[in-house]
Length: 420
Image (tube, rainbow, N blue to C red; front, top):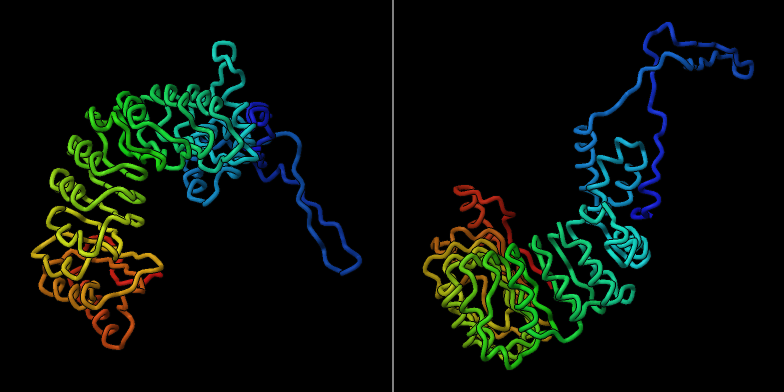
């Protein structure tokens, strides 16, 4: 296994590649091959007088940079660590920095990081190398107490944590609160019901946190009405989901730090348009990326037609077609939007009176109201490719965006793509 402690520590120094230092040390024989009539030379090397080739650690590190670009580099990095002690020293930190943990390798990883339940009896020097712990691939391989123990051992340098679905409980929050260097916290997979009060008590000690994925199992509680929670002051990205309601949106989001740049809201079945509009009036100016996705049954067509006015500095908008109309484009005076992504549910039916049209979008781009728009992806249910006329207008839109990109290149792919 790539994360087996025994394999990592018991690395024997293999013989380095040796080359003859002079031509005189080469012993070339030319035996005759009677079967084909040709002479086949064989090259032999003497046993003495070798010149060792030792790669500097900087070269090995440069080689590993190419290995890390592979889709699944862990097995390759593990193989590199077995070459020699020099390769082991250069690769071991990379091997444990972002380990891929699946069901088959989880036990070996646990025995390496937690050789004993009592940290004072036996300590693993490899635990300080782990910066990212992704347990999203585990279902029933771990337990709640084991997850808490892992967090306790990795608390020193852990920067990213993705919680498992079934083996994260209340006892894990105490260990999680001690991960002071944590920057990314993803609790979206948790199936157990989590109190918002307990969650925010943990967030108080995570002052370095920049990205937070809310648990989808979060629910409304009485404390949400009484207490104003404190968000991490360096929070830049927030992904909301679950049982949060209008009161949580209006009350708790009003105190969110001004450095917030990314906001995603989805699967919030109790949230209405009014609370979100009120929240955007407070935090909309600082948002750069915004995502509003289904299912949110309490929202209606046209609820977010004024969204670009509320979020005047938005660069990327991903929204469901069920919550906007053609007025989203016609209301634009000038906006720096660069990426537009319009999705829909399989049951969405386009209404000619409300459906956003490619003609309206082309007009605002041609009038330089969306002169920074470069990438547009829309659902096929909008019918932007349904007729020959629609296809021609779409091509005109692409040409207009390409002309704007020639004048001001933003480093984005330019085009209009149609999805399912």
